[in-house]
Image (cartoon, rainbow, N blue to C red; front, side, top):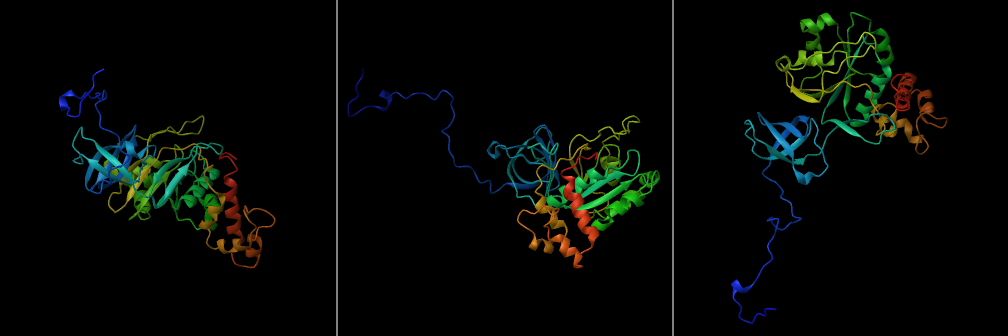
Length: 336
């Protein structure tokens, strides 16, 4: 064994080489204080299209974010190549706090919660009055998800030339939800888009609806320069439409300030993630009456204080009925 004296030369000391050739790890992460702000427009197989100022930039999520995923509508911080040129890639290093969140699960017993859209101001629920037939239970579930996530609902009814809207309007009239009724002729002439646009100006609006109701056709009319998606036909046997939108996409509203987010057609809208106690916040006329409710009240039981609140004239009985119908939507399937 070789022994070194007190006065060794540096060349005499052997060091064990680092086979991987990487630098020592550190737990100190960069703060990226100079990162640029952007908005996620769409997500496709790990690649995120973002708007940075007036440039469209392709990006990927930084490794340091772990499993935290960015979704359409997220405000993010980006570093790297932000030129937007072909074959360039930036990194998303931070996802800012979300103002609102639209969530859903595959079904009511699915523990996996999926964030559909972030930071939207409004949820436009699109339903056809015929071909395919309207599904009130699905509408109820979308309303619950909107109220739970902090979004204002907007009901858009299409194909009024095939069936009247009176019955559906009567069902939701007591909820004071703004609505627009359109026909196929109005959609083709552009009149329908003009009337819907009045409710969208200055806001970020997510569109949701099951396949075949004309959702993507309406979105194409609102953003004509982005008509890159084809419309689908309704199956004459099943009454269901063919999916034409495969991923959520944010598009600038034509002729006005605002954003439209087109989402894939849904055939189910699970509410396993929803705490029923939060739905009451969408009923400000009923919420004060819950002060006398027993702990963990479902608002649909014999001891619920809302019955007395309504009997005393503080709120319309129809409003209490609407609340309980929405709460029970979490326990029903869309086809019930």
